[in-house]
Image (cartoon, rainbow over all chains, first blue to last red; front, side, top):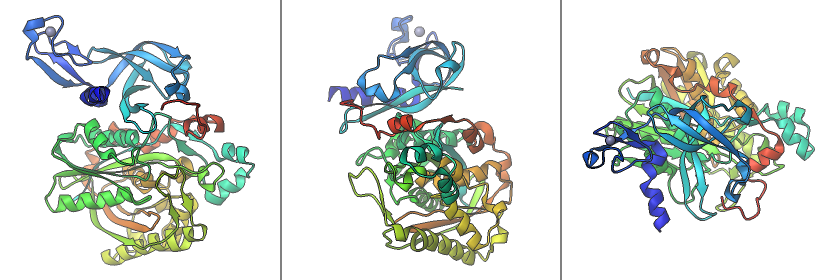
Amino acid sequence: MGKLSAVWRETNHRYRLVAHQCGNCKKMYFPPRDICPDCHRESIGKMKEKQLSGNGRIESFTIVHDAPSAFARQRPYVLALVKLDEGPILTAQIVDSDFSELEAGKKVRAVFRKIREDGKGGIIQYGYKFVLE
Amino acid sequence: MSGIVSYGSYIPKYRIKPDEIARVWGEDADSIRTGINILSKSVPSPDEDVATISVEAARNAVRRGKVNAGDIGAIYVGSESHPYAVKPTATIVASAIGADFSLFSADYEFACKAGTAGMQNVKAMVDSGMIKLGMAIGADTSQGAPGDALEYSASAGGTAMILGKENVIAEINSTLSVTSDTPDFWRREGQPYPTHGERFTGEPAYFRHTINASKMLMERMGTKPSDYTYAVFHQPNGKFPTRAAKTLGFSEQQFKDGLLTPVIGNTYSGSMMTGLSAILDKAAPSDRILAVSFGSGAGSDAFDITVTKNIEKMDRESAPTIKKMLSDVKWLDYAIYAKFKKKIIVGDAVE
Ligand SMILES: [Zn+2]
């Protein structure tokens, strides 16, 4: 059940891109962090939940050919570093695009997609991926 | 009066043409096109299901209406392809849009009219004062067995309607339903594909319920077809809704804007609601709409709707319009389609 509770705990940030903002230096953290690595003790109790817009730009991307079997239907797929408008950079799939359309700097927005299924009887994990704007 | 406060839809980007399907099964694409009037249908990506489609439609409705998700007091999701047999889609939608913990919610099932059944319940809850705002979603990723006639039409998409009493863009003047036990279409638990009771699909099921519900509502309201600017019906194919509309006395001018099945296929629970969404995309104040869904099994929900002045204040382009979603597409061949739709089993892949 350990993994299941991790999935459950991460629901807010995976479903809705909820970040943590340091109340001291205002820096935004995604995935959320309980303490700001810059402000340490100064940030204790000052990390506030902040909803990200889901808008950002492609920093860089790679095309994954050697995909795990769970991704066989999506192979090859695109994994990108996306810099969100609010600052945080995250790794996510870019979907519904031809590779020729992709370029660093292009605008993307978050969409809600199925991330993985734990077999035929297990839980379905949902979360963010990105599409070209 | 209570009514629609906002609306949002989602149609997957992928499409396939009947020519591709007919090529594989050795059928005549021309006769499919003219026979059921389907020119293409939407196909969900492998990472899309009713939960993801519902969330996208719900987010579009929240954004377009500038609604505070915390004010939504009820969420009902109607579908016949919920991702789980047990575990509601509504909970996933609620969490993904950031609805409050204090929330009425459930999943509904009534073939293709579960979403409109949700609209009726939400309207009643708004009218009774149980909730301020409520959301009803109709969405499906419907399945047609390979080689079956349904494979040409069964598609994916969904629409969310937010109902309330304030800032109403379209008042729901009245709604009624008809219900009968009719074996026109069903799917047993655990079966991947539905079965249709051939001779029951047309007259005793679709036409009897759709036409009677429309007539009963117009009788109740003292209206006639010419009183409506638009009419939209459930669209299992391109032919049935056209025939129903003409039988009732509606002209093409009235039903063409809500008729989407010829280009996106039958989105089942999303069908009539997405047609209504296309109408709301272009409707003007005081336009009157007759909207009638149909669910196999069988029944129809009919709505008499009047668009209000508030629609002019709404930035309808702030969420993707149906027109936009129809123009931004990617075409699939049958092989990729079969892979996407899991008609090809991939070894021991865990997915
Ligand atoms: Zn800090």
